[in-house]
Amino acid sequence: DSDKPTPDAPILLVTNPRAQLSFGAYLGAILRAEGFVAFRMSSLDAINPALLAQFPLVLLASGPLTADEAELFRAYVLAGGHLIAFQPDQRLADLMGVRFLGGSITGGLLPVTDHPFTQGITTRSLQVHTPITQYALINAEAVAWVAHRDGGRTSFPAVTVTGAGKGIAALWAFDLPQNIALIRQGNPAAADQDRDGMEGIRTVDLFVDWIDLECIDIPQADEQQRLLGAMVQALAGDAPLPRLWYLPAGASAVLVATGDAHGLQVSHIEPALELVDRYGGNLSIYYAPPPMSDRARTLRRVRWEAAELPIIGAVFSDDSGYPTPKDVARWRDHGHGFGLHPYVEHGVDKGYHEYWNTFVKLGYGPAAPTVRTHRVLWSGWVETARVQAQYGLRMSLDHYHSGPLMRRADGSWVHGYLTGSGLPMPFVDEQGNLLRVYQQHTHIVDEHLMAVFDTGYEMGVDAGEAAAIACKQIDAAVDQYPSALGLQCHIDPFALGSEKAAAASAWFDRVLHYATSRGAMVLSAEQWLAFTEVRNRIGMHNMTWNEGILTFDMVIEEGAKRGVALLLPLDHRQSTLRQVTINGFPAGTERKCVGGIVYGAVALAAGQHQVQAYYRA
Image 1: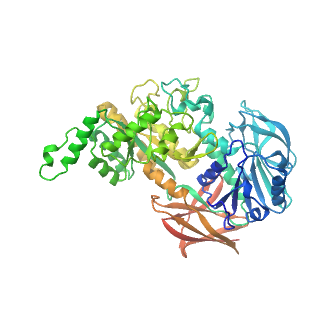
Image 2: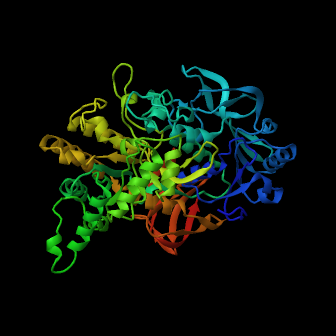
Image 3: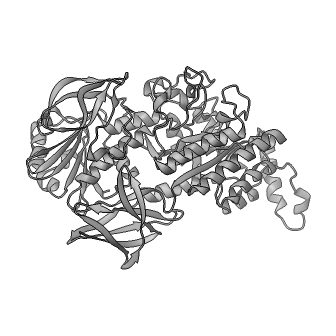
């Protein structure tokens, strides 16, 4: 979005460059993840009364304000504007209907109240990892309170809303986008520490003593985003506010199907691909070639290339059974992915460099743009993601549900959302800068559930119980928390003999069957990344609202499998959505619910579209 806002969008996001930690850009990523693309961004330095007046709703990122800047936002609200401010300068406290008390609470929880904004949001308390400023309510309504870790509610509000003059002012008492990042990416202070009892520094180490295991079945980050989404939906002006569904059109959930393969042969890989094919899905293989010298690698590549020559090719045929570039091309043509699985025991830079070179020199390039690191070893808070970005890798599936952390003190195991999310979001660094890599959690992991490698860290249940656990998580995604669930089915069991192969095959088959029976799409990580990137680039322009008719333009690029679903509120003020036309032709709608708000969903293919939505009392 341009830094020169135009009046064809209802929302202005104001970033504050003077914030000590500036997560304003990440707030924009949150809006996009929630499907709100009709917004513009501007720096606080460029704000003036005329600019603010163009937008019914302004979101103000955290950071200090001068007296003049505070007066600017005060005047905007009193004249009829709607403002959502995140941990704002105390100069705005009275505008927000609260009194600044000084001090803050760390390690607090957020329980919502029974409020129009909170319908459809979990009533269980959600974690807040950032300091929460202490306010007293004056004439604002509490949307959510601050609670202590023992569950006792304080008298301090966490989220409020109030009328002020002709406008409305809403307050978040903490820096929501920074909190979302901390929920999703774990504890920065735990970086580079082996803390979970499983050998090696892994992504899961960032969540030890960080995630409350009693909340892991809730996507805590997503629920807080959806609470913001409900506020945005309600405060975005007179016109109904369209948004995008999280998943491809027609999908109730997505299973992002992946399988790590360590030096395996074609005969081990193809049974897994055939299983996914049976359900009309696709699978990403993350491949670590077997160890070999430079000379052996060169000879193998020469032999593969010579085998393609007419007449003499048979002389050079390769009987090693390892995937050839021709095998890889055939799998990719069928929609499957084939990407890197680097070993980084001797350093993330060294490991990625070596495995990238080996992968390309074997003729497997270009590598798929998604990746999982071997053993999900992780460097820094986001250092591995930085290295991945250097190689053009744009989605990481390294955040991974496994190990002793997932076991309560009483011995029972937990399942759910380690990162608090079922949605992909860009990684963000400690200062709030976005990285060009999406974080996609791997929620359902075979080696955590079953004795795939007999590490001693797994639950050790049989294929039937492991499938039941996975299916329960699919139910939660379909029925309650729209999600793209990352799934890991290692290819290695297909090479380890009849018992392991039979268990892996039975488990994978049952999970795929159940997912598709519930309307979930089974996509490779590459297909999911392609959809995510297409969705992220959609804009809405030339938006007008005239006598009950909402009109706007959208452009959807190629690459989103099954298209994108546009959401239009079914009810708006005292009117109801009666008809939708796309480029002048009537379009059918499907009922979808997000955070307690009911929408009509319209499936859109790639192309340029003029949308008209007709509302009548």
